[in-house]
Image (cartoon, rainbow, N blue to C red):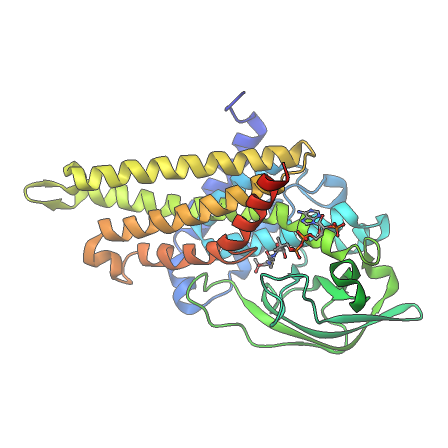
Length: 380
Ligand code: CAA
């Protein structure tokens, strides 16, 4: 077993670290306060190849591996968790299924400009009545000649306010349950698509999610992604990759909080010495550092399995479950170490605490990850 990163992986990680330090860290607090979508930063991510990290160069991406993608997600999210999720949705939830299931023609039209960062993608699985129970889709797609006609509503669609296209799931055969779900690539500027205003949320305030409504939206039949009835498999296997990105995001947020707490604990004095020298604080720091390393190892294992082309459903769920709950613990402790200042908007830790919370919910709640992991254990 080799714990060393390759030179390419290290270089990409360092590029992301420098970019985050220069472009994201100085702005993240203001973007959060102003709910400002970081248009400029996202454009620059595209220029750096970070909107299609694991997409081969011939399809507009950086041609790196999934370990590199996880490292990049950690660094970008350490700088700004909102920018992290914008990036992860485009990479994992939009580009990846088109790369894996798309035809040559679909890849040319719907992958290349998105992997290059010239266009933005999103993922439409969740509905008002189909969250954790993703198979309970109500959106329908009915074949009409060379088109499918789509009707329904999707909600919590990250990037939905600005995306050019969506990988959308809809029922093509209601009687068949999850085997009646199909995936489509839908141009979001098609007549009949309405975007609601951005959702108001607890954290990741510089990213935007919204509800999307589809009313008799005519989608060319050639935009079917994969086979009819294969959509649930497309969705689930896509989330196997997406959960690695969110787990890496959780590690990045936790690291930002830990680094802030470590620096603060070294300079803040109480009872005649830096608080880091009180065992109560030193042990918290020890637990935080250990927790972050453990989570990162789970993330990198899942990413390495994806690179090997091995099924990694349980390992991705373990990484997502552990990293998101770890991020909650670490940001909680970081805020505690800061005392009253931690509760203040003058410091960044309250934002890290708020931002970490969503990682336990989106791309499958912690409870769903436990279902996936335990189902795999019982099957073995
Ligand atoms: N890869 C390939 N196929 C898979 C699979 C996977 N990872 N997981 C399941 N399948 C297949 C199964 O093999 C089965 O196929 P067959 O019919 O051929 O046997 C089929 O899918 C159904 O499997 P299950 O019986 O396990 O399905 P289920 O209905 O019990 O649901 C679930 C399983 C794990 C609970 C699933 O519904 C789930 O993951 N729910 C959470 C949804 C979720 O994560 N939503 C996130 C939305 S995206 C988001 O959050 C984006 C954002 O904003 C950032």
